[in-house]
Image (cartoon, rainbow, N blue to C red; front, side):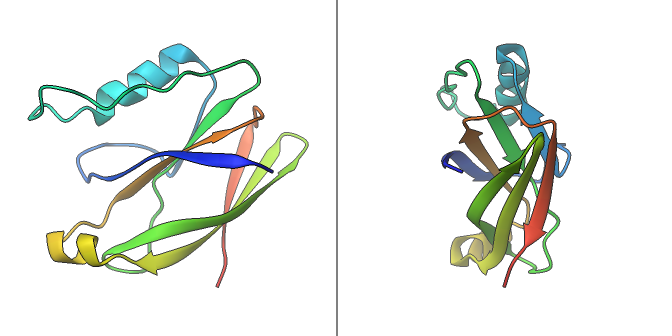
Length: 120
């Protein structure tokens, strides 16, 4: 399945579930309001949500202390979206002592269930 990474950040103050599926513009606006850093005058641009698309927000619990994730592939099986990922070391996160990666993906479907599957 085709997917594209929309945004990547690292913020321990943002309270999110491990996986969030966004299917509406209202939910997308709510998410970007949470992600907005008040110390900057401008916020990140909000992407457009088209029909039959979803945004998948992943904030995984990692085994690596200051790690990141790399998504290898996504597979759709009816309403289930399987996200295959691996943990990677991130030198920038290590230097800044950051350990809460958040990654937003756009997918061309509207899954009701998303399952994270670690790979090696």
